[in-house]
Length: 599
Image 1 (cartoon, rainbow, N blue to C red):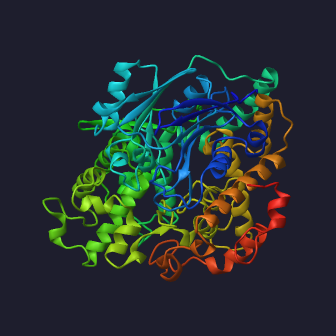
Image 2 (cartoon, rainbow, N blue to C red):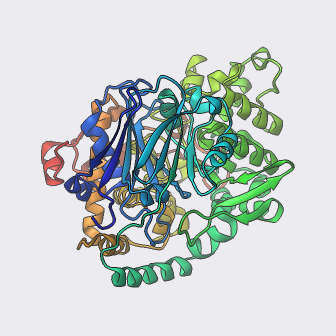
Image 3 (tube, rainbow, N blue to C red):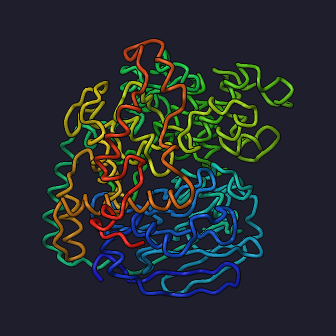
């Protein structure tokens, strides 16, 4: 099979059995790969009511058909499971080099089931697969784990691992690969930890088959020209990384500050991409086959490594009232080392700061640690470490902001959707993006339909961010488009420059198909609907398609978006209708049949 290897690796951690299975080609063509194929495989094998941290939950690592190919950004993989944070289907995306190396080893996907009796890791060298003891690695930081596994094998082996946060089942734990690349959201690291699996080490010697090399070169050249000529992918992201957004978002008055109590941060430039580049950036750090190279490698004092990204700078910066960029870089470093989702970690600290501000958390709760007060840079660093280690109050923080605030009787202070922390954009001033937040299949998320692109950046066209007209339709299109991109194995950032026809043409050239751009979008809609089905069966109903009360009832207090709340009640019915769902937000038999869904 061109593009696909045609093989799935199944590892039963309970009994140690290892099997190679044939990929269901029809299923792959229906759901593409990555996020789509992973969700379809998961739904076939796992009951939706499964305990996310129990041995019956499964964890899948799934490549796209373009992963490992010479296509722009062709290095993405998906970690698919049931989320312990939200209870929804989780498919957490990561870049770096691990996904491509897994493809070179001959595998489209890994299915992990059961639970190892003792800490273990998996070694994959082409068709040779072994389950080995990870006892000496348990408790070690991600960099320590990576160093030791590279010494045991080679620096050319690619390593995916969890840190202490995953081992301790933190609900906001990430899975790390290539040291500081993260499958970050939805607590996937806790699922890996619950299986006593510390790491996966892979080395491959193969290549991915290409159906039409001549056509691929032509399409590749066209796409590269678009990427280089686009202002975001050709200039903004390469020069300043994702943090190029800091000043842009703040100038629009939608840069959440102090746990969304405000949306303008006066000291935004102190933590901007421009300041990062001027003071701390040492080099660019691109993923496999990436011409954009938005990744940053920074150094401050004795701390150095990958990041921070825009979302991270916001979470530990303005959301916590902190304008010390050095402190943000250090907090990001400790997230990488402990294996934490930086968005949820920073946002949970911000929620804790508001809990302290309002008298729910007392001075005595901090023990010998610094007080979690807005603007306290030292507290951000220290409590990130204690959160990762689940020490003292850190054990409560490790459960995420929803469960933290609920313990104090004020869950409304958690800025979450479906119990997952919202990212770095205040939807009160970006109406379409708010619909995306509320309806996201994995809870609070910005990359499941990036409405910032048209509403703020003007791509593919500029929309009035306050207007409600057409926003539900735009949201649906972006969600379906993103689902397909996540499934094909490319980075979402390419969508700033490329359209559906471009992706379809790359897919066709690699796999020998004849898809249109409309076919590509329809596949994304199919994927979106099966995710919705899983969530409904897992008990995540339409009543959870909402936003935090603050964003619906409290107007933004100052700045360019002052006076706005989110108008979700006006937009949601139209969204359901455009999706072809009932007024109750549930896909009907006719819609599922039209999409060919039989899961």
